[in-house]
Length: 386
Ligand SMILES: Nc1ncnc2c1ncn2[C@@H]1O[C@H](COP(=O)(O)OP(=O)(O)OP(=O)(O)O)[C@@H](O)[C@H]1O
Ligand SMILES: [Mg+2]
Image: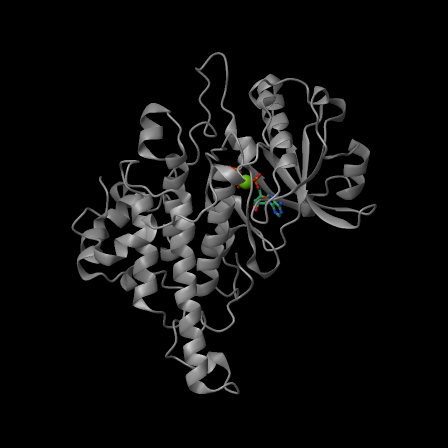
């Protein structure tokens, strides 16, 4: 493969991902991850502040892990919806299906990381249970489910996400990743950025999940091959797949795949397609020369997206995504540049909407216009987003 945006292709559009300079750097960096995180042991030895639940409390919260409260099954176990009466809160309860020391390590890591990370775009850990060998994590409940379900598994009659909301979700997720990469110390590499791990709250407010579980790989004998170690098919940076060497740029590649999914409606890897086209990034590369040449990516946009939207904002979004999924890590932007670029895109969408509203006058409903940057998208959007 190779970078989709070679030096001749960018023009003025190249500025956006590289201009950020006002981002708080070292001065705002707070050392929240204790050194002993890599020095695993019993969580009882650690200074964990999250609420400790008894197994009985969680049985009550889930009505005995009732099957109809099952939210889903992931690589680490089953997730149930629950309700904690004493704190009057809906929660998602993840029972880790893990064996032995490695399972304990991952559990402890998740508890330590999530307990100490506090950001509006990171899923909050409410508490945990380690009673009688149980390994259960209790998270805030995210009522709108995963971004994956809103892009790939729409229920009959469910509205697809509009353009503004998609950009807001990407921006919020990028801010969560920015916090992991640049605010906490030592930085955290998520290693499993994907649409299924971006969860949506009220107003489509996005939060990253599962970064603690994703962080640690196996220790000791390295014959154990885990999909967790290598991330999820379709999202892994090529150099990480080849060498196992993990950097922040691996997360950026995965984030680029998420962007492409959100923009195109295609899956990161689609087994139903012929092999050469199964990977979204390979498909995108086959389109990239044309899109770069025409500086127009509107024909790549998810067909489920209704309503007009500006070719410029579409092109910019694809441009950023293309940089992220560059074969080489070098041209991939820093997450702070991605936050800047998505913020610019969102601002331009919103200023178009304001101009459009101004032309029509205050009494005209926003959705009646077709002149703005996406009539559905340019209404109020579906929610708060980022
Ligand atoms: N805090 C939460 N609130 C609401 N739903 C959740 C929450 N956490 C997880 N889920 C849902 O539970 C299901 C399983 O999640 P889980 O994180 O275990 O698996 P996954 O994200 O699909 O894969 P992976 O194991 O790689 O993370 C998903 O459908 C997810 O949307
Ligand atoms: Mg997950």
